[in-house]
Picture (tube, helix red, strand yellow):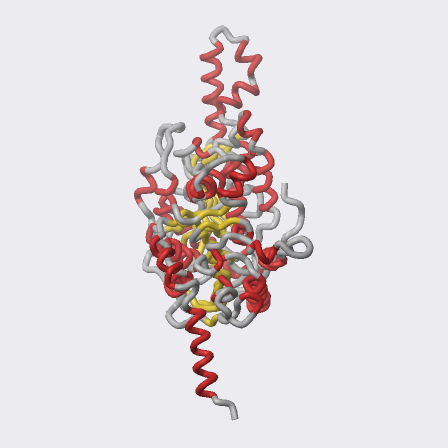
Length: 516
């Protein structure tokens, strides 16, 4: 007969050892660096007692745990749990065990959990803190293999994919993290990079710190490789929870509804004081967003990158909406490379998860010039148009002030079967701003006048009159001119009518064609 008391005691010892991670010395070092351990992170992320772990006893090749071979959970905790009562998958690397590096059992655990998610369709949260492939297990026969990248990529658009650099992530951890559609970097302690400073020095002779090489100030502000910067690990975990609250569990479900006490017919008087009388004066479009969404609150994606466009998740009458808005405080709201990439990514995410899109347009066009051409702004801007071809969610466009040229077209896909295209009385439309139109269309006529400058100004006034919203409404190029205070109730009522179409479109978004 099996001695169950002995066997259970053995199992408890094995579990206790695995829960000890890399040992007290390495745990203390993690804490001294201001970082949580992998299991502390999971405890703070998931609902209490909800973790169902896969592979806790995995180690080097599954060998018996000899001292020199033992690697607790082989440096990664994988499993399922709940966040605010909803199921999620967690992949969390443990820097205290082999630097969170990718060993054979570590790799097998990631593949196992990803294959399970492919069938069960729950969001994936990756808490990354790894140093890439484990050298002693990679210097063997043949080239390296990485099917887990393809396995994760195949889930894009089917379930929410979230990654967070909790520590230095180079090599495989960094590559895996970039497949996420929402990427967070913890300030000062987190990095996403191709290779760390030692390899950079060997390859290029450059000496640089991890933070200056691949930290949040690089990727959240300059490159856009990451979306949101977290000020601490706890802040990062709070961001993850909030982001998830706007998304369905998968693309076969609707976004979650949260009741609100904010009246549908609320008409905010502040909206009459935001757009300046001076046509060229800037204003903060975030004030407009706050006035029209539930309780004045919205969650901004990429708040520090491409700041001439605002991309945000919010709720209106308790239902999730995605908002894309030009920001006149930066480059007058013109579309440049960064803004175009930011807007295109956001549109694709919302389209994948049945989140209606509201465009608040105030765009003088696409940013011209040598830098714009070098950055391939033309191609990036066209990528927005490409994304528009596959939109299946309700789409509304409200022109607040300017909608000029291709930049104005791309900010709301005017003509792309919106459920509403409307304008405030302050709106102006043209293929070029009035000054540019006058200079181009009547150049020879203006130059031949006795007072060319006076003639140019008179011509500009004529063009400005034609650019206003009333001619657009008269020719039925727009559906309606709105009193700014009507913006919230009008949007909500149109979305309510369009909501029935969700039942016809639940499931994966169509993806084909070659992105410009």
